[in-house]
Amino acid sequence: MISYIKGKILEKSERSILVLTEGGVGYEVCAQVLKCASLQVGENVNLYTYLRVGENALDLFGFETLEEKSFFELLLTVSGIGPKSAMHILELGSLEEISAAIGRGDVDYLTKVSGIGKKTAERVVVELKSKVIKSVKSTKLGDSEVLGEAIDGLVSLGYSREEAREAVRDLPVESKDTGKLVKEALRKLGK
Picture 1 (cartoon, rainbow, N blue to C red):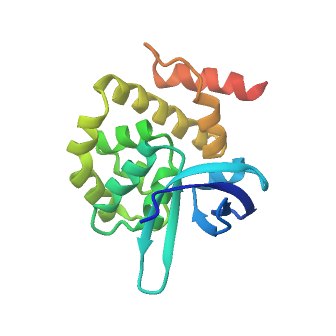
Picture 2 (cartoon, helix red, strand yellow):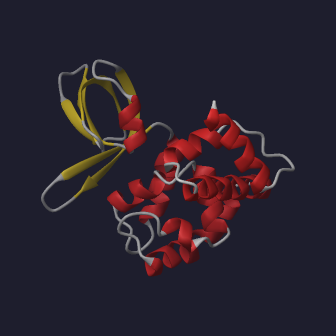
């Protein structure tokens, strides 16, 4: 099992990078779109990995942190969720936002993922709700819920999900409602 990889990036595409290790072996690693976009060819990278052994291929999925990898593996326990769907779910937002959506049973949030319909999203909520609530403090769930609603509000105003996430990322959440967060994010985006 390949569980960690360290090396230099030789090539990159939208969803994968080619990492050359010091031993001279190159590995193609599937990663989140935003992670791939932030990496540069020639840069050194350290990734936790998950190896999927398929009938016709060995697929390697890379993660910046152990928490991301663990959450990915948790998503794979749900019937109907494969590695590619799990990666798409991780692209919805931070682990806290995704956990909050599952914790509050927000099926609409999960159906934004390509290839995940209402029934699969409901299955994710049913099978993982108790697990994510145990792993995330309830105060963080409340904060993440407000942030998620603010991101959804900005997306409905025409901003991309990435722009919206970036706009609310550093905003203080304490004792604020969604409307106040959206106004602050709009000010930030207007600069």
